[in-house]
Amino acid sequence: MGHSRTTRAFMLGRSFINENPGMDPAPTVELIKRMTKIHPYAQGGSGTSIATLLQGEVRRDPPADIPETVFVEASGKAFNTIPPNDVGFYELLNELVQEQPAGSTEIELAGELAAIGIVKGEPFAPVTPAICMRLTGVGSQYPRAGSQSYPSPAATANDDGPTTVTFGPERPSDSPASDWIQTTEGKGWFPILRLYSPLQSFFDMSWRPSEIEPQG
Image (cartoon, rainbow, N blue to C red; front, side, top):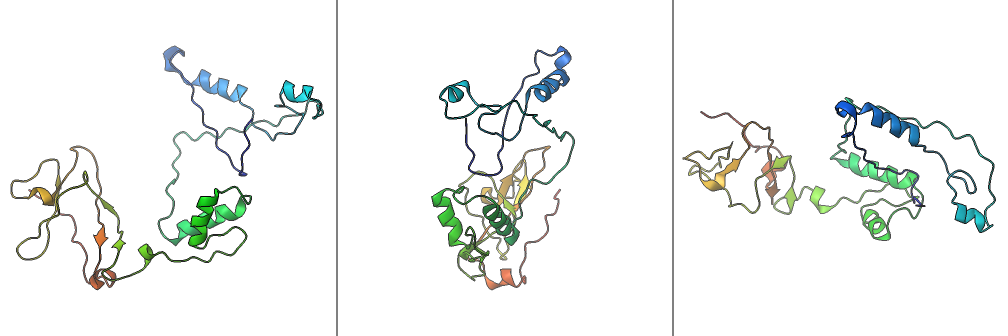
């Protein structure tokens, strides 16, 4: 028997369909629905081991009506599983901490959450970490970005100042290796830009990267 410290729990399982005629998943799905029963546990009721009952410390309750387990068909459904990437992430995290029992969070993690203003039973008072502060010339800022294998050589600026980065499966002959990010032919990709010690022009938006333009 496992005890969950939270009011929510996930159960993961795996079934095989390789022995079904034509690899049809329907018989396996029907078996799962017929054999899987999820319901609240009560001592002495369904799920209590024989050994526990023989100890005499728990009275055996009469068989109770087990509610039907509801299965939700999610095949083909589209839903967003990406958490917010702004302050909403911390608000969501605070809601989770507040709705779960005290002690459900590891002490070390609870301490880290408290450091940014998330404490069980207290109003959310965010403490802005340095990574989110607009500190010119300090730290790093995270616009959306991407990259190739790390470490890679530093990009080389053009003679007139700007830096031209080329994306493609093959490196152009006129592009230094440091200014080329390899992509996989036939597959999509997206860029991510990470800036170290950004200047004021980043924050006031007087500077911004140019659009990606097709070449050739």
